[in-house]
Amino acid sequence: MIEKKTVSKGGLEIRTVYSYGDKTRTLTHYSSDGSISYIGTEYLDEDGKMLKGVITTADGEVTDTTTMYYENDLLVKSIRERAGGFVNTFNLEYNNLGDKSMEYNIFSIGKVNRLIANFYDIEYNEDLLPETVTIYRVQSPIAEENIRDYQ
Image (cartoon, rainbow, N blue to C red):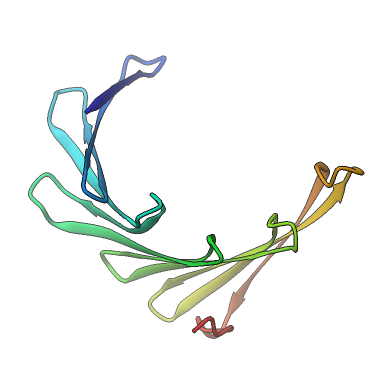
């Protein structure tokens, strides 16, 4: 078990306790008054990568669930579902060196969807190490959530 305490300039104190189990990691967040603010539980694969994350209230009510998908040990998609119908889908693509080349997020609340896409233009040195990264960002409302199929 590991404990971390953060105090803001205004004196607000947040304490987080990290505990570990068999393929799980739990983060319990406490407010300044000592009450539990929320609990985050991460379910890990055998290599320690997060497969699923669940956020609950102190009473055990699930408020947020995130599911992660990997290909060749790289995160390619995560879907975050929150209470109230909010869905946030992150999709990632990588170049042949394993560096992120594109990331697009689809935020969905009911029938309203917004696409935010980031494109990464990476310049490498002779050792194939990144020297500069230029990020181009586009965002727009879209009609559907499933604009690409990753199944």
